[in-house]
Image 1 (cartoon, rainbow, N blue to C red):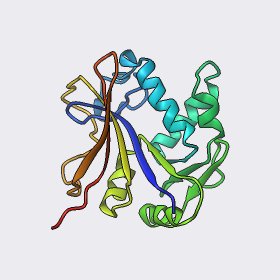
Image 2 (spheres, rainbow, N blue to C red):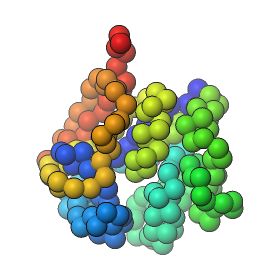
Image 3 (cartoon, one colour):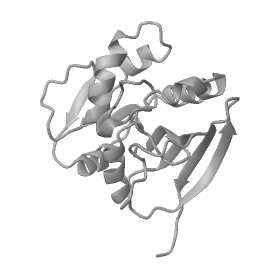
Length: 197
């Protein structure tokens, strides 16, 4: 059975929208794109490299897939380019059609959470979710997330799409590891806690 890890940048107020670039996601008039870039350091790079080295397949929602597929194949000077381009990618979408343009990409058909549950039952690669907030919410509702690696930046943006939005499923977590970057980013690793309802 495979495990599923959510790996995302967040602000203190839970915003996950457009951490990498100003033009990454401007939905809702979001003006703070690229907020994570200035805080990248060797610690964060090492954590990202460690996650990529785990050899998991990527699990992406449609918006994240479209952004990544339009950006990463053109990034020759980035150390993560080869890993992202060569990784197996599963894409949850109700609107995309086959064939997908980015190499090694497979469209998950039907209900995303159900398709992911079936993927997790198969032996082999673990799954890593990058971005994909709406997808994460559906996976949380089905208790399909095994691990959260959250890079929490010392910023409050006051606006933007949040990882844990209003109406998110109740989820108790337990902290299993923490690190801090030289730029004040806390890398917190959580697993679901077993709780009595």
